[in-house]
Image (tube, rainbow, N blue to C red; front, side, top):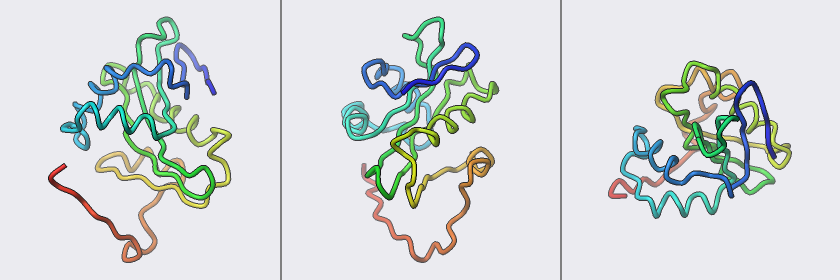
Length: 144
């Protein structure tokens, strides 16, 4: 699937993902700055990935997001990032529109995500705080 807008492209084609760029984006994030390349590569193999590219140069990946899903009931949106040189152009908002309109992600009962500082972006798309956080449980392996 591919979307075009202005001078940019969003694509779910894994063949054109720039793994070096993705590793660089994530190394500068607060949530994945210590994630090893092997873990990133493995996560890409098991996710529906979205790359954002400069339309003039498809080798220039400027954004990324991935969705972990069963394609039937649940999706976890993660690793959403736009390169700092391209922020402020509404590319994150457009990336979200593309992800949520993807044909294979329609009709899911539940979406979730974690964010420290982008609540305003995600609320525009219907995300909200948990209705009953006491129902959610987690295991965090802080050594990883």
